[in-house]
Structure formats: C-alpha cells, structure tokens
Length: 306
View (tube, rainbow, N blue to C red):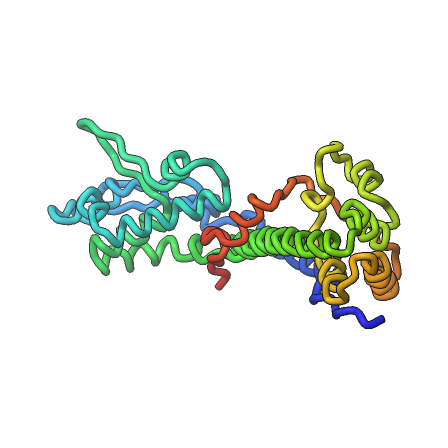
C-alpha cells in the first residue's frame, strides 16, 4: 500500500537543535565590562549619573539632564510622538511573549512615570537608546561608545533563538491540532456514510499507531476520562494521526484506517530504530485554543537574532 510521505519531522534534528541552543545559552553566561557587572554600566556626564541595564529600567529623566536639559527634549515630549508609542507597544508585546503576564504588568516593565516635584520617567533600555538619539546624535554617539559592548552582547541572540524556536513549535503544534480536528470531521462524515461506528475509527487509528485504544492512551498519558488524547499529544503525533485520517479519506474507506496507521508506525520504527510511543505534552491544546494560536500575530513575528 502506498502511503503519503510524512512531512519533515526529524526527531534526530530536534535533539540536535536543542543541544545547539543549550550550547549557545551556556556560552553567554554573564561576563564583565570593565569592573562592572556585564548587565549594568554607569554613565556619568554633566554632574549626573545613570545606571544603564538591559534588565532594569533606565532613567530617561536623568538622560535628559545629562544632555543639558533641552527645552523641547523632555521625556514627555518624546513619548507623545506616534512613533514612540508604536515602539512602546511593540516592546510591551515582546515582554508578554517572553515573560507572560497581562498588558498592564508588561507595560510597567517597559515604561514607568512618577509625578510630583521629584518625578521621573524610566524606560526599557531600547527606549533609552531611541530617546538618546532624539536628544541629539552627538549624545547618542557618546552613550553608545560606553554601552556598546553591553547592548551588542550575544544574550539577545541566544534568548531570541530560544523564543523563536518555542513560538514556532507552539504554532506548529497548534496548526497540526487544527488539521487533525478537521480530518477527524472528514472521517466522521465518511464513517456515517458507510455505517461504521466513529468510536471504532478512532480506536483503530490509535491501535494502528500505538497498539493502544483510546482508553489505554488516556491511562498512558494520565488523562481524565473526558479528555481526548489529541489535546495532549505532541506535534509529531498529531501529524501522524492527521495523515492516517487523510489517507483513509482518500481511500474512501474508514475501515482501512488501522492498516494505514499501522504502516505509518512501521515506517517510523524502521527509520528511528525504536518503537513508536506517544509523546505527551504538559499543556492541553483544544481545537478552539489551537485556532487562536495558529493565527495569532503574536506568534508569527520572529525576534531578531543578528
């Protein structure tokens, strides 16, 4: 029987990528810049001192004073510009992606303003960099000469690779969950036409792939009786289940799904040299959640790695 070729889901490659990312993360442990910790550099100019860090907020008010307190260069003036607000929104989205939390909490990690006589505006280091250029090109050039090594350190590269990889995995699993949900409906329609019990089709697919029925799969994955195994299976497993559905649909015979799934299992075991066992994900992914993730702009934008 000719089975549609599997998509390029290479287990060995996944392991290699994980090791590569681990090596990158390990190679970017904190170093030092001068006699300061790598994540903090102190700027001194015109009698004012500012600590510049990629982990904490930077005082935009003190940067303004350092630059000579230009009348039209106050932090509030700059923050009122549309492009500045676009940057703030982009950074808030990045913080939510990386650290989680709601929009209000994320914004507090990007921008904070205290009012009163000693009021101060503090911002994310990327805001501080943009603001320094607004104050003057000379001021930004001076600042970059001091903090250049800090902001060009490879930590962003390593972190962003991990974030992008995680997002891609999340989106791919979501897409496969949506796909298998759709192919399930197709096989259900086919089963109703041929008079085949749909539960039998489900169980035949599971037995062909894993040599377990739905009940046994739930036990294997630690799932409740009401949960479907598909909500907790990995991207690779979802791909196999979807392929089995599609092939049976193409053949017009839901009763062929066991043979199709069994052939997929045998192909895996021949290529990988080990039995096909279900891989369980900790987080459940129901069809409606999968649709939201698969088509969310938040997961489509990659962070820079160069």
